[in-house]
Length: 323
Image 1 (cartoon, rainbow, N blue to C red):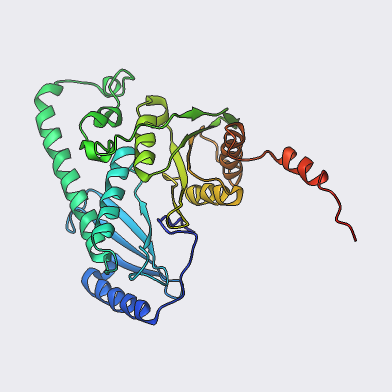
Image 2: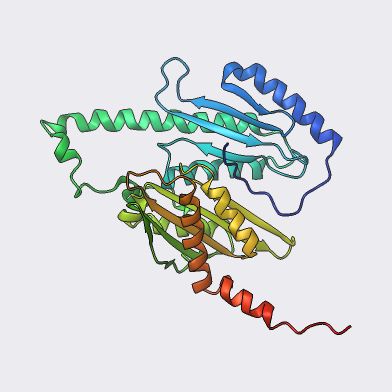
């Protein structure tokens, strides 16, 4: 079982025979190009996965890109995707996702999976080269540094430092002067040494979501959480549809469940992050309960949703219809 993430609206489109034929031809081409790297998960549901590495001979970095092709792809909808890589987190994950989204925006209506795969591969190659360069430049300075010194808590968090070196267009919209939305933090839930804490911010554009995440990850404790699961829903009035996305950050299926909660509560124009610090004891399905419960509590506190007790009281006060 895996989580799929995308940017589909709640509105679905009728299946188009032309789209299906384009999908079949694209999948055949990708299978031929990538061989064993390409995997069919569920042909009937149009679910696929491709394993992408920085180097085919001696891979150092690998990403699994999982994809669902909607009935109206490529003519009217993007693929739904999930980037799976335990090492890819925070701002780097946001950077890669932004690259895929920009590619789709520039090639709307076209078959883009090949472009996506190559963009991911370019990202991996660049990161691998940067890592090698950094390691080479640091070697003369390291001396006899011990493992304990390397793990010292005073060492700066690279994800925090990266905020100052990332291209500014990923986090600041200078043309529209988009501001970082106010962030609210909720009450923690602790179970068997695992701790869950929700955070939310009002958002009306994907750019604000990135600003929210970037600002949140400046907090070293939050950026160092075992998982930072998030989901958001934005209502686009001019199109009468929702823009939504989610990320499980290694907590398989948690992002999709969090987004489903937002859909059930019918909340809009809000992004929610739930940080989990793993305590060493497996919680099983209880972890999903805690993620959704603490998220819902904060949504209720901030007025995005009604508490179950208030909802029940409202129903009991409804006047009986006259016969």
